[in-house]
Length: 181
Image: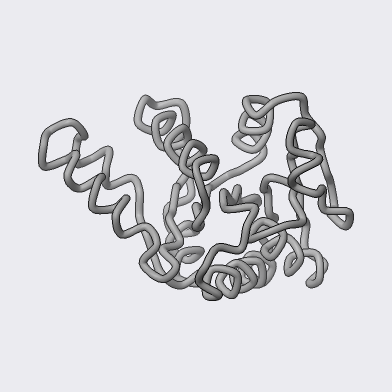
């Protein structure tokens, strides 16, 4: 495993712990010689994780669609910033560049990216590990929903078990590394 795709918010969110964990995630990526692949923004949690990776001289690859380049200010110090035409192109490049994925707190874009990568895994399009960094129990309702889907027989347990979560960035990266193929 060389590159980790990180899906997270372009805002900081209410809880200061979100940003603190984004910074820690950036640090742990570099310490484990893993490159960051993310949405290319300099704002919010996206900016925080990228800032730390850049500060530590790690590789940070951003993929930013033109439509968001005015709202989510492009990070100017990345190793590689790719401007693409659309959100589908952004996701396709991020998926192709990444060997594993981490989901952090974010909004509807983050959730859409998570569910797409989870769906692609479930239908056999890829076998890359997918982990949730459950900062401040942000994802507890989502985890409960996934478990409820299993209980109600809309989601197979073996499919649900592909997704794992940790509250600590280092632990999450260790799990990713242990599951990489």
